[in-house]
Length: 537
Image (cartoon, rainbow, N blue to C red; front, side, top):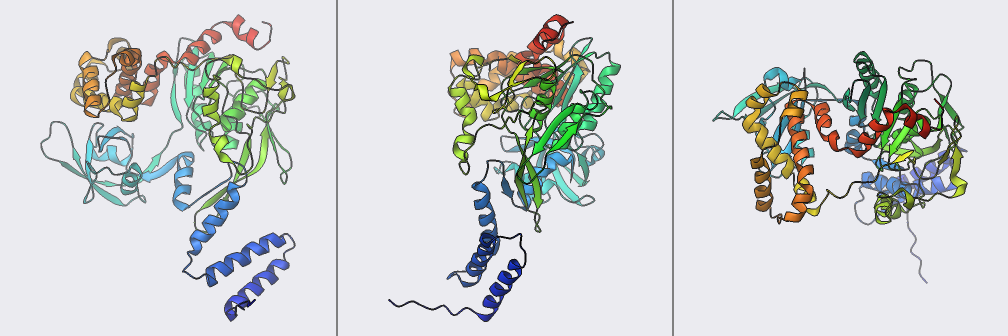
């Protein structure tokens, strides 16, 4: 057998010898690590075809992380920016909220004090050109449009806008500036003594936003609070600690973390909480994860408040960001977090197999768990007790609420899903508002008058049916009738959002929030509230 001898280029051989020698000098780095570096060097310098070293590095990192847990991941520089931006709470841009409807960018809101407000851009405007590029009617991705509108502060972008009542396009030059991103969606009074706050994510400014909202609601007479964490996928762990601190007495354990290379770290409440005594209900669902579960677990374990909704996602792993030189990042799982009673609520996963993990929520639906609490079973090995009333709680797969609310699937039909997915509900809402903005502003100067006085006209629903037919959504009368009330409510809420703000959207849409209805019933009755928590009056 002839064995071909490879003559290594002197530079390559020297590099490998140097790398191996230097790695040998570092006792912390194993033989396997040196092997990886040598393999990379060999491929990048000897492979038969040109090798993209950047891709080689990314593929190697991604391949390693994929064999670990489902939450360790790599993101390239662009993805890293997209991931961190919503949590950092600001970016540089022109200061608008927008929707893409029928391939046209509609301005939904102009952020107060932002660059667009200063030059006179209005809600309802349609942006047709950005600089010299047409963005309307060309099926451009939202991310591509955002790249054109965003940019470093103090740089300029030219836009051309179509506005109702003007025959010609209006042209503006906007100087980009710093734009705040808020994580608090809504804060208002449900009744004379109960406040409501909805948090969408745990961002850098979330604890400040919550403190300010609580302060304002207390001035309005708030004695009890409903905190809505439904759909909140989490964020920064230290922000979860700060939020839980608002509700817990000094020196009560909020959460602790521990890992193979990470010693136990305890996180305790301080004495600065602004809402440590009033009745408290937290709303959660199957999409409430991570930081949401830390807050929910601490509140539940200390019998501080009632958890209402459905079992949470089940993410009990802590990721540490590892920045890389080119702006990319590894989010590496370094520890597990535990609630005060000692629960780790991470749901089961198999190392290196994300398929079943990613289907877990679908499996919950298939086995009926979202419809009935009786379909949920925890082994005795996962049984824990709360720290005050000694109530039974469970670990190992999310936070199980104290009061279960089934998913209301009766109103959600295939017809509704199709008109929602195609943006038809948004389209007819925007069209109606565009035609009637002046009248609506005059007749409904505040949300209370709008909520109690405005009804969605029948011709708007007829427009929805016609638009759906034009988009080849087959009309199904039975399904339409089942979903009609929901569709009507969503149209009314979307008009309120665009007429006022996001908080007003929730004041409308929450009228049919079954978890919130139950929360209000519980919080309004001291007997019911304390009985659920196992406490006497």
